[in-house]
Length: 294
Ligand SMILES: C[S@@+](CC[C@H](N)C(=O)[O-])C[C@H]1O[C@@H](n2cnc3c(N)ncnc32)[C@H](O)[C@@H]1O
Image (tube, rainbow, N blue to C red; front, side, top):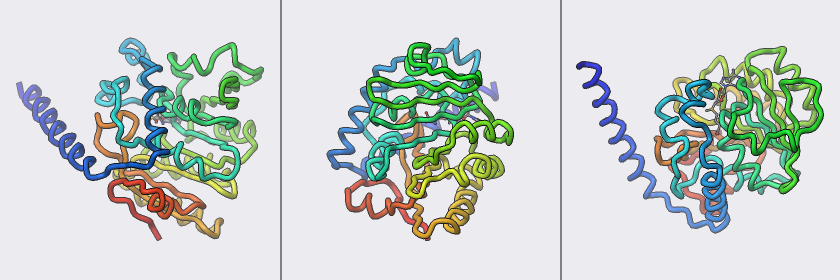
């Protein structure tokens, strides 16, 4: 009985929270035509992917998806920008071909959108899980290249000429991240950190995978700064990067995550050698509470 009341209470609170965010989003209309096209394409990619993970598959391996998020993982999302939309938009500012690393890919929801919109790019995944079952349309035997390590998949997407790689490993494990670093010896110019969202883990991930692995011009993107203590963690990482790079900027804002409007807005940070605070202003990209750190 008490459990039932608690459940209904939490559900009601969630409805109010989502309603609050829905109202907030209406104050931020984006008319940038490039961004609008990217959003259309991404929604099409997701609708064509159908089910990213079924209930039975979720029962076997939850791919790091919390229960409430899983309920919405396959639901259509509206036109308010998600981080996936912004990634494709900002990657146009990099002067070299994209060498992208996503740490924590789960069922590849963001990754398939990147693969669909980018061309001639290196797109690398790092995750503790095996490749998600329904993403085999990207990673399959037909596009696989020979590899002696069973935890590494390398393939090729003929349509967009992207090189696709998947490393199965734990970001907290020095040996496994060492194998990854040895196997992948070019520097990344775009890294999305989305595996673990707590201080010690993010610092370890930074030391094991990110530090020393960024190109001279780069984008380093963090999700979920609203997790306890994480804003401070990202500030420490930003300070460390500033010691190495002369011109580096950090912009934070709120944006939709991987299930769009079905969840609250996420606080994200974008550390880059490009001043994206100015870029967003110039391009009239409107995101809640955007600000630049000093
Ligand atoms: C939030 S999900 C990633 C969502 C994905 N970036 C997207 O936008 O579609 C986090 C992923 O990180 C993985 N993960 C959690 N701990 C990890 C670890 N120690 N090492 C590597 N991956 C980990 C989870 O299993 C899950 O697949």
